[in-house]
Structure formats: structure tokens, C-alpha cells
Image 1 (tube, one colour):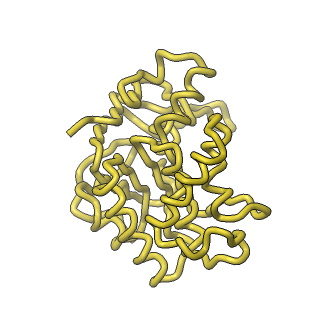
Image 2 (tube, helix red, strand yellow; image 1 turned 90 degrees about the horizontal axis):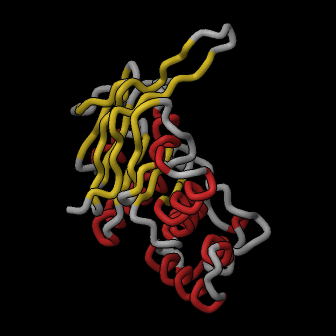
Length: 232
């Protein structure tokens, strides 16, 4: 399998209010292949969201390196980094962050239109993705007209719009009821396999983590294999 994401000795340090050092990540190593789903678990405040931001090039590591689709994050300038991130990574968060004045179809088209894709091609791609996530009959509905589960499915389709090889999800089902959460979990697992994307999910949810090929625990800044401990 093709490796799409590598973290090599990633360390992230912040400065506290007292001027002291806060080491959130401490030498994290990780490799993710296309078609693979990896779950990252750990206690609240362990740095899981920070790790996801570093892996997705929203934050640069203090030390170490992240390699996205073969390109080193530390080796590129900020403008190039934004292009790399937009091309290589799709993000899904706990809250969908859909634009409420636009339809589901228009929300999914948005990343493609921003990237310069024609309206016709963007519309066809968005329509196909919304069908894949089970929303063929809801494409003209605005977010306020969609259920919580449908909103998150739209957010997943939007994350996949530009065909990124990597998708990062931060507690994607944390705001859903059990039935909608289970449906979303099934969707994530199937998309990783069928579309060949690398998928990294930060979660406290045992059901979602159980669908991953690997479950990793982030504790004291270190990422290590686990068999489910750290889930709540």
C-alpha cells in the first residue's frame, strides 16, 4: 500500500502563561497508507486535536517532520503549505461548519470552485459524493433543513470533494445521537476502503475506533499501539 502520511519524531511545544514549556507531542512517529483507517484515542487534554492539526499541516511541528503525499511540511513556505494542504487533506470536525445559506450541493461544490474547477465539473463531483454518502434526495436542502447526521454526511462529502488522499476527522460523531453516529461510523469505514483514502480519526467512541485497522493511544505526548484502553 502507498504511504500517504508520515510523522517522523514530531514534537510540539507551546509556551505557557508563566513562560514555561508545555510539551504536548514528544517524538510522535506514524505512517498511514491509502485505504487504511487509523483511530487515535486518549484522555481529554492529551493533545489529540493538536496532533491532528500538525498531521494536517494546520500547525508546524516544533521538531521532527510531517510528510504529506511525499512532501515535507518543514521544507515548504507558508504559501506552498496552504496549496499542499488543500490538495492533500480533507478535514471533518465535530461540528459540521457548513455554510447555512447554501444548499448541501453548493457546500460540497465550494472547495472545488475555490480551487478553480468549472461549475459543471464541481456540480457533477458534488452530486456523486452526496449520492455516495446517502444524500441523493437531499442535495437541494440547506443545513438547517438537514438532520445532524445528514449535516455530518454533507461535511464528509465536502472533505472528499477535491479527492484528497488523506482525511482527518476530529470527534466526527461526538455531536450525534447513537443511531446517526453508527451510520456515520459505517460510512467512514466504507469510504476508506472503497475510495482508497488514508483516514485518521480522533475519537472517544469505542464503536468508531473498533472499525479502524489500528487503534493508537496518545499519552504523555507519545503515540503507541493499544487494544482499546484510553477509550471512555
